[in-house]
Image (cartoon, rainbow, N blue to C red; front, side):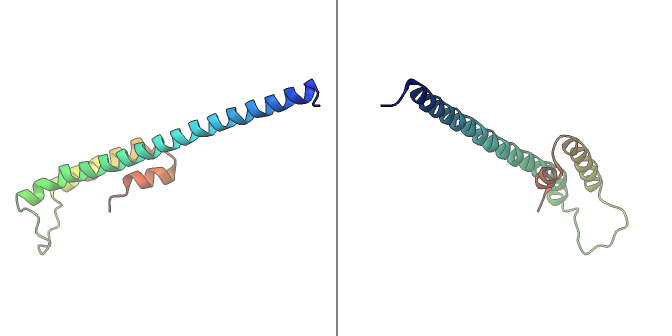
Length: 105
């Protein structure tokens, strides 16, 4: 017959195992939330690209055959916006996550 000490050890081991499982579940939930946040940031960057580049396409101002030394004002605005976003994200995210969120293509 198991002693009281052995039973207590078994109960403590079982409780510890349950607590570890709960913590692992919480970690997994946070990882999933992190992935969703990174996806939303990526989509936000893409929306910014559409916001600045769609007027060019709508007004027919984009002519790939024309060699112009002057960039389109919308491209300049987009560049400024992307640099601003990069500055904000690079101060908050590790470099790999920052690159993923700014990946446009």
